[in-house]
Amino acid sequence: MDEIRKTFDEWAENGRAELMEKEHGKNVIKFLRTISFEKPFTFLDVGCGNGWVVRRIAQEKLCKKVIGIDKSKKMINQANKMKKSKKEKFVNEDIQSWKYKGKFDYIFSMESLYYVDSIDESLKAIFQMLKPGGQFFCGTDYYADNRYTAKWAKIMKIQMHLHSKKEWKEFFNRAGFKTKTKQIKDPKGNKKWKREFGTMFIIGQKPERQYSN
Ligand SMILES: C[S@@+](CC[C@H](N)C(=O)[O-])C[C@H]1O[C@@H](n2cnc3c(N)ncnc32)[C@H](O)[C@@H]1O
Image 1 (cartoon, rainbow, N blue to C red):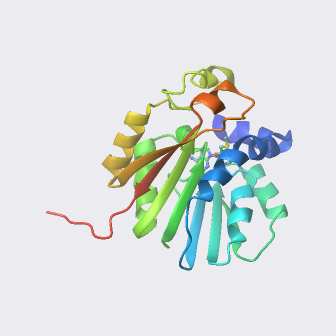
Image 2: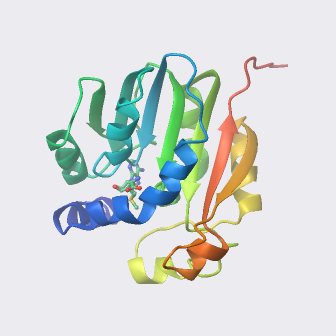
C-alpha cells in the first residue's frame, strides 16, 4: 500500500481527522465565506478527509450535489458514517486516476494537493472536471514562502511537494487556469505561521471559452 494512503488511514483511526478539522477549520471557513453562491451549484472536495467541508457545503441552500474524494479508505468510511444529507457523496479514489464523467461548478481542496504524485497531472484532471467558468480553490499551509511550515515533510516522512507561491501560480497557469492567490491569516492564531503567513489559497478559474490553434 502506498505511504500516503497508509498514513491517512492511520490518522482516520487515531483522531487526527478531527484534529485537522479543528486546525484548518477557522481559515477555511473564513475563506468559504468569501464565495458567493448565487446560482444552484455542484461542488467537489479533493482530499476531503473525514468530510467536514462536504457536510458544511451541503447545508448551502443552492448546493445541488457535493462529492468528497479521498484515497484513504478509512477517511471515506468515517465520512460516510457522518453523512447528514442526501446531497453528500463520498468516493475512495485517487484524484489523479479518478474517472468521473460529470463536471463541477466548484472544486475545493485543503492541505491535500501537495501529496499527489504529480501536481501537473492532478491539475489537468481537476481542470477537466470543471465547467467553463468554474473555479478551483486550493488551500495550503505548507508552502515555501511560509518558512515555519517548510520543515513539515521531515516530520511526516512522506512525499510532500514543497513549492513557493510563484511556483504554485505557474502550475495553475500551465493547466490553463486564470490564477490569483489569497492569504488568509489568523491574527489571534496559536501558531506564529498562522499569524504571520497563514493559509495560502490559490484560486484558478477555468476560462469560459477555450481557444485552440
Ligand atoms: C492533510 S489531509 C487534509 C484533509 C482535509 N482536506 C482537511 O482539511 O481536514 C490530506 C488528505 O488528502 C488525501 N489525499 C492525499 N493524496 C490524495 C490523492 N492523490 N487523491 C485523493 N486524496 C488524497 C489524504 O488521504 C488525506 O485524507
